[in-house]
Image 1: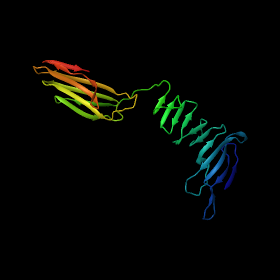
Image 2: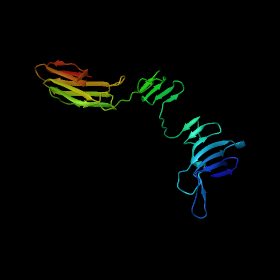
Image 3: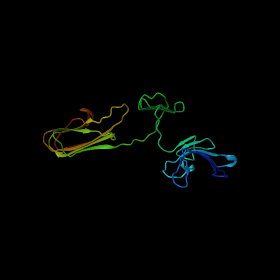
Image 4: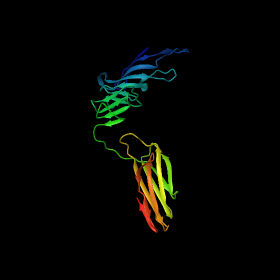
Length: 243
């Protein structure tokens, strides 16, 4: 253990060094790698109380540059910073293994149910907000483009977790036969209440056959229609376009 007293108007410090050891070389040195230090920053001995630890393998004493936690003269506590700007100021990651409550009902984190409540202490969902929310929609679009298809064709797709918009672009061009196309998403469809998925279809063709022919474009979830143009019979030289 070392006791140090270096008094100065500013940046002088007194402290107790802990966890010391004696070197085996000559001269023998007493080295302390942990310390509780008072750093003077003002008159009448006012200053910061620092808890310091130096993990470097050498023969140098720990100093106030190795502060891990600092309590200022105003009562602020800093972890990872020596200049805390609030009652508790943490620089770095924080791990909490139990519930976290901020004020009476400002924020509550349920560590058992993995739920967060804002404005309430009994969240019933992953995020449960009691009050208004201001947000911005950020969408990633899955675009399905068809230039031609069979007379009755279904393709299956998986919706990725970061996608919340589906755009079916079905432009069949000039054809003389029936065209029905189904884009069926049979995996990745979210089931959580409140999830929003935006759906859009652009469907076009020009009918060249002398006999009426049908046309349909449709988006399905697990084989069930969620957005469809409906089935339309087109006469010769008839253009169909819907968006």
